[in-house]
Length: 260
Image (cartoon, one colour):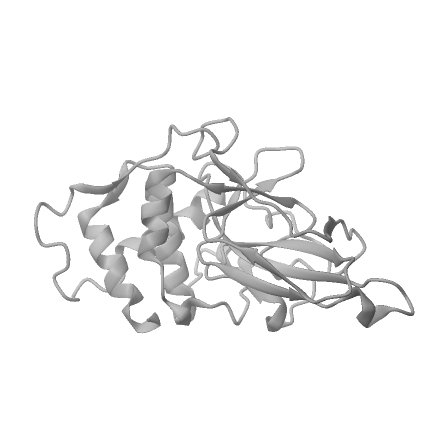
């Protein structure tokens, strides 16, 4: 089943928008324009800690666990520009002023449980407002839970939503209670890939999909989903394949045009 779902993502990367402007003309279609990072620690099937700058919380903000919190599908709680899976993050602001939390493009969310499951990459910068603690003076500081949409960095590992069976999670690509923010990647190949995805506000996540439907042999993704599958397929070319080819690079840029 995992192979079937992975195939669908990769197929989307190779079948989108082949008739666009002739971008990156110089060279052969099979030339690699963004090199592979499959042998870099933490990426692909290579073990080890990810390379990058540790992500830090603003002063006065605490990252907390909310194991009893049901997944909330409200679109206003969903952030990011890629939706292979979501990570839920919960914060408490202990200060009497509103605080903005900045999540930079390239933030890696680390799988924090037992097993071999994908780590996630945030592909666009996100800013979240936390209300002042004084807004909840009678009951103490409130907890704010958000959902970051992420891309997968390890093609051979499991998706975090594969075993979702609870009523609140089974129809959504959520890795509930499984992730924590790690580092902002310094990998040069991932940074080049992230540069390709800059300034496409139309990719902002506004709706959900049911990942369990992809296990149906007759599954056909909804049109709105195809761009995200194309992006994930290109990302896996870098993290687990030989790198992003000139042809795939050109096709990705063409597919992104409507989202500028």
